[in-house]
Length: 254
Image (cartoon, helix red, strand yellow):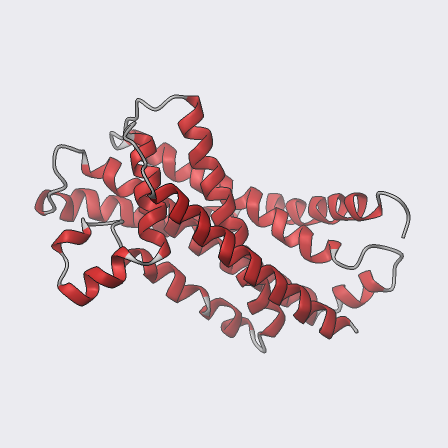
C-alpha cells in the first residue's frame, strides 16, 4: 500500500458517502424529527407536571434528547453498510489497490458528520423553545467532544450490526434498545423519583453520567466524577466495539 494510502482512500470514500447524504438529506431530517418530537411533547405536554427544581425543563431535557438523536442516527450507518455488502460494493472496492479498512472508516466518519448536523438542528429547535446557556466556548467544546466520542462508540456497534445483519429490517432493530436507554436514566426526570430497582439501574448506566455531565456543563455547575464515568463508558464501549467490528470485518473479507 502506498504511503498515506489509508488517509487518502478514507477521505475519498468518506466524500462518496457524504455526497450520497447531500443528495438525500432526508436521512438527517428523519434522524432529527423523532428527537424534536420528543422535545416538543415532553416540554409542552408533560413539562408542566414534571418538576426539576429551578431549572427550565427544556434545558434539563436537551442533553437526553441529544443522546437520543445520536442513537437514532447510528442505525443508518448499519443500513448503509448492509447495502454496500448486498450490492457488492465491498467486493469492488477490495479488488482495487486501496486500504481495506478505509471502507469501514468512511462509514464511521460519515456518521460523525451527519450526527453532528442532526444534533445541531435539535439544539437550534431547543433555542427556539427557550433554551439558554451561560456556558462559554470551552464547556461547549467539551460537550461536543463527549458527543463525538459517544457517536464514535455507538457507530462501531452499528458497524457490527451492519456486518452481521441478514436483512434490512434486522440491521435497524439493534438501535431500538439504545434509543430506549435514555428513558431509564436521568434524561427526563431525576433518578431520585424512581422506585428502588429502577433507580439503581438508572444511576449506574452510561446515559445518566453522560446526560448529567452535559447538563452541568450547560449550567456552569461542577461536573464532579460524572465526566470521568461518562468518558470511561464511552471509551470502553468504543474499544470493545471497534475491536469486535474489525475482527468480524477481517473474517468476512478473508
